[in-house]
Amino acid sequence: MTVALTVCGCDDVEGGVEDVTGGADTQLRALHDNGVELNGTRFNGTRFNGTWFNGVKLIGAGFADGQTKSNLSGWSLVPGTSELQAYGNNGVVYRGDDLEGVRLQWLVDDGAKELLGVQLRIVAVTQSADRPDIYFTDMDVRINEGKWQSLCTDGAGEPTAAIVVPGYFDLANADWRPGEHGELALACRGTAAGKCLEWGYRMWAKQGGLSLADHYRACTRMVRADYCGNNVPHTENGTPIDVSDGLSPAILEPETDWAIEAKWGPQGAVCLNQPRKLAHSRSAVVAECQAAGRGALPTCNNDKPGEHGGLLVSQAVPG
Image 1 (cartoon, rainbow, N blue to C red):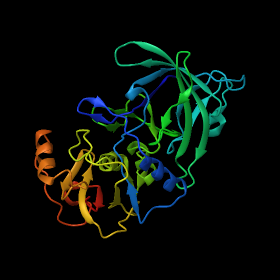
Image 2 (cartoon, rainbow, N blue to C red):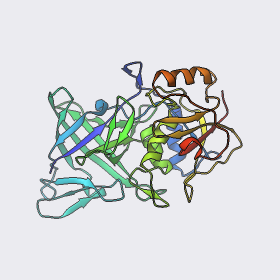
Image 3 (cartoon, rainbow, N blue to C red):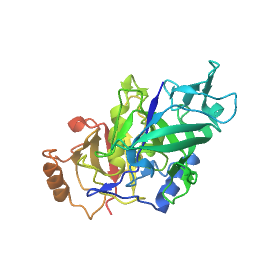
């Protein structure tokens, strides 16, 4: 069985790819690592995901160091989690930290039909203390016979872990897609793709019987202030936002009296008051969304997430 993995490093800015770094992402990770939230707020950022491969698919069969774990195949996720699993040639299932030290040989399809030799190695796998269905997988990567490097880095450029998720990331639109052929993607911690998972919006999970896939997509738009769903962020790293949802029971509830900034769906904002950064006026954002084919963007009239079909609410102090 083959598997496709995608990793994206996408801050697409006017046709280019920008790798935005800064200490704020590191601060966010520290807050999450210690299980502490700052007055219920979450720091936003402009990075959609990590820094490697820009979303190309990795296609190939796996192998590992050591004789007992050779010829691993059937790579997938343990249902309802982000824990990797694979089958040994002896029929044994290896999962989670059983896979530490494993090397994977892949052929990279870069979209232009050119194949490059890529190796991944799993350095460590740890389970989240806050959300037991989330597993952090530290991976290194090298191209051909080059130097091993961390697959993911945080906002300060320091190595960090990935969260393996089903589906793939559509870089052109900075969006997650469920996939149809068993694809797996890697969401780097400290980016929008990773933050939203750790905040609780795991696309494989349900809350109150409702799939969280669209909440995840709405969250990645919200973190980057991608109001128009056109992969254009309107914020700066480290800007605090208060995030809430209308789920039953709620995953996140409002904990400030900050003004409502916007309400969010999978394609971006469904209503907007004052953008969180004063450098962006409401009228300019509305015009941008109209130019992007989103139509009119009304104001938000109450504090209920469901207004205009919204799934999430962001509150902010414009600055």
